[in-house]
Length: 238
Image (cartoon, rainbow, N blue to C red; front, side):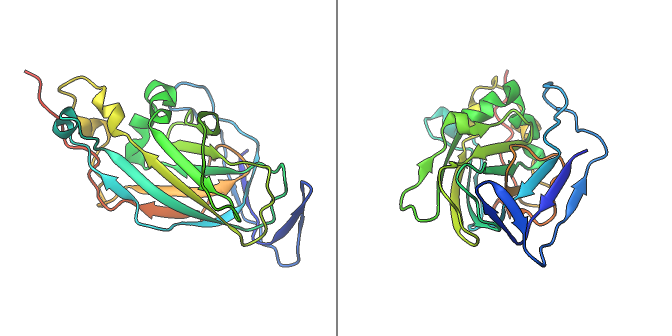
């Protein structure tokens, strides 16, 4: 049974958590494990996931619509760019695992599952800035997990204490146009990434202690792209 735990006030010291008076705990339970959509078997994780932040997508998520003709001329269209501010709900000790979980829009699930997620991983550029740091640190390939279709996990460095209320900044670019460039001429790209029915694609983000979330909790940050068309239909083959 999957359980999501939300800590709104707590103190974490040397890897142990003690709740202060007035702490609120919310649970979201799953009655059965969710099957994998990319053939990797049941996605069953640790039954307890601790929510570590109250975050927000600080700027509109920008979407550059993919255009096959422009890319064929050497341009690079088809990108999603976002920034996320993660405000810590608890003190996070040295050695405490921190994962930024990014839930992709439903319309991106098909492209995210291509080649077991390897195609998606190859087109992600991301970095983060821990509290007190002046520079951003790049996420390395080993820090990024794309094997869970529809979600991306980013593992942050665990060698620094983060106090309650401190903010970690995260920047992410997904250059999905590079994946569409590899598809056969004549592909209808709208079958790969359908147009959004609401005028923008919805992303969700949250910082937790686990690399995958079965039941997405209420209260996580939501960001919507500034466009609702990810790709033009594409060229016809004759």
